[in-house]
Image 1 (cartoon, rainbow, N blue to C red):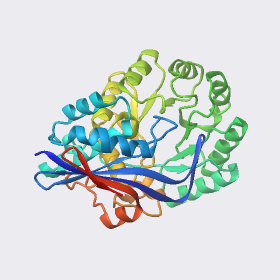
Image 2 (tube, rainbow, N blue to C red):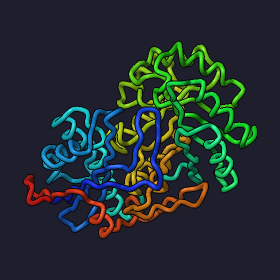
Image 3 (cartoon, helix red, strand yellow):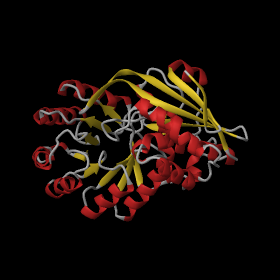
Length: 378
């Protein structure tokens, strides 16, 4: 079996309401969908959701790199040769993990369809009985976040994730305590600062004021790349620390292990380059007693399903936050969310159906690559 053709689509997924985090506000999410076809007639789908603030990738650049560099490199390859495919991609261009993730995910979809197995059976099998997801709340006024948190609890969510990271950290403290008061002492709450508290000293000062909030963990309180500073935060505070934007490569994981900088790491397929490297990173973390999570760049059902397959396959990946499909008013897939669980299919490959009509409706530009050449685009 060989990859013989690829179709690449730049799409925009409309959000039900703006998604607000410390460093950006998103009115919609742009993504690149890759459709790989083999000489046996099988089709596999992958997705790239680049984040210029984290990996330095941008959607138009990701499209061009896929079209001109990465897809031509894998045309003619067997999708089962995933180690070789990553070697070829890494030999062509450094970094660009979201672009590489799109091809990786499509290859796993093809592997599963060719073998009649769900992707999780290709990478470890079913390690969990069920998969849950939290209610994720954007940064808003304390009273609004408290109201939304209480509603989420009433709806049946089993945990909350609060986006914080306001330059006015006193407002973040008010937000967190307002939510805790609204939902009571037993609801698990995790917070994601998205680098918003910048420095270790400032983060330590804020976190020590949150001891009474009963937080499960605090995610990426300081700027990415400052792993030594993250270790300092962990040593001088009581609440467990999760690294996110600071975890992009295996080298980052090893440095976090060496410096004892985190209790948890948030692995995202879009940061790591896909399922294959993400699982390797989770294994490395497990060897050091660090618990892993698969997080989201707000992907559609394609990227979200891929992430859930990675979660399902590893005991050490204990949580997931792949809720992109729930945030969109229009989507291309049918990943099944039944609050508070995602019902990951045991159908071959990713286990989702892609609505080609919706895909074309949401497409801004596209092209076809065959035999290493771009045949046409619009």
